[in-house]
Image 1: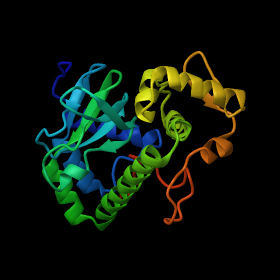
Image 2 (image 1 turned 180 degrees about the vertical axis):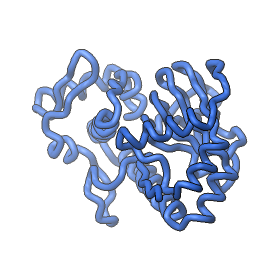
Image 3 (image 1 turned 90 degrees about the vertical axis):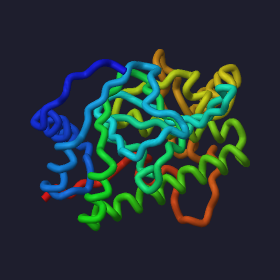
Length: 254
């Protein structure tokens, strides 16, 4: 991890305000609650490839990405990895561990990244004080469960084409907030396919007019037809691509 100087309260407040000014909410808090959060908040910087925390590590603090990109993985003793998701500027991760210590996955910086680390005690205090913040966490838990369920469904019952389409849609949503051209290696890991098979699928999607490959990344040309490639479970009334993205939040500073 890159060595960083202790940040003043004013600097940390400015960083939180920057996220707000860019249309990225920080958390559902009153101003007094946000002041306590910022007072104890740590700013941490990571180089590309550095691990924020490992699966099984102790810890219950909450993180928000100030700038950069991180990815969450499941991995085994033989270094096999399954990509669970990515988080860009303004997105949160680590909220499941607010309830019980013990990290449920590994998080790695995919480029130089700065994180705001919110102390567990302050996050729990804010939840107890603020019904809006508590409801935010409940919404987040539901969304994380739904997304995990959908990912398991696509992995178990969807074709490789379905998995790649699902990852392309998620990567395109990430691009709306920050310009992060993910590598083919990262896309392949997320879709659980080989690099070679990914290229074949992308070529097929491009031939059908679903996407256009660029020098760095891709562009979706027909989002509706690409979403139709993704096989998802029914029953919850959620249309493909609907609802908040993983990591999104709402803010009510008063």
